[in-house]
Length: 353
Image 1: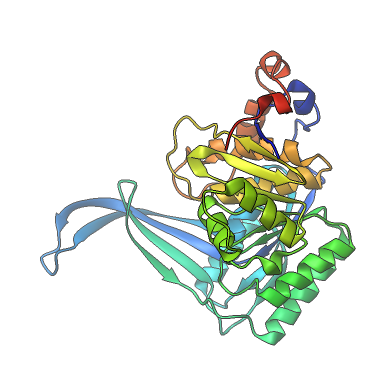
Image 2: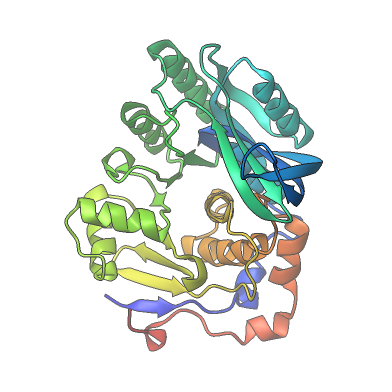
């Protein structure tokens, strides 16, 4: 089993990427919807009431988080994003739905459960440093009625026409084991690729998925769950892939890049970002890009190469921020002669793990 070093994007591959983005590609995101709220200000004194800083609030920033941020990344690639998930009947839900509408995200798969709060993460920031985070949420499993209604909506969207599906699991109760298996089975019966961003250490419910995209910490937890040592990354990767009967496994490793396991081969893609400001949401960008590119009919290696470029762009931004097609396309299509001379993947580029 070889591990190959990721090369620059050749012009021959860049030529297959539509210059205007992935219009016409429909990607369904199923998972935990969130509202990310940022309260920004400055601190110049300590409170006389307790030894805590006093924040002079300057402004507030509110964005879609969780599965919502995944959908925004898809929209950023000029594809059509469809959301399926659960919200509460509260002000956070109203603000979230407004953001989704502004970004032309299709919300036909969203179900309201009045007894459940919409997940809202409030981050208090002082000069780009987080002081505290406050979470309003429920991680309880969905009620049977809500789960059945959500599955019905998901299946209807698949039947209407969908090119790829993302299961965005933030462990907030939407992607229960039984529900997850049913969605993967529904996708398989319709030959629709399904990608999973995992949160549980037991990946059994994800069996049969097209691709699972854990970060390194999540991958190690899953590896330990199948009794594989942490330092045996290549062995654990193929073992996990085989046990789950998935087509591929993409492990994101922050500054160390990402590794793709597929069939009997693995490929390593070095990180491209020269400076990292904030890694928040980078995983969302990776899975969104891979799913959109696969949904457009291109291959997995091309999808991962593009996702690596996309991730290098979003980590330079503060807070959760989706990829923008203008930024990504500028990198894809510039310096065509340099990219054209770049080597393709092959055994002569094998490197030790």
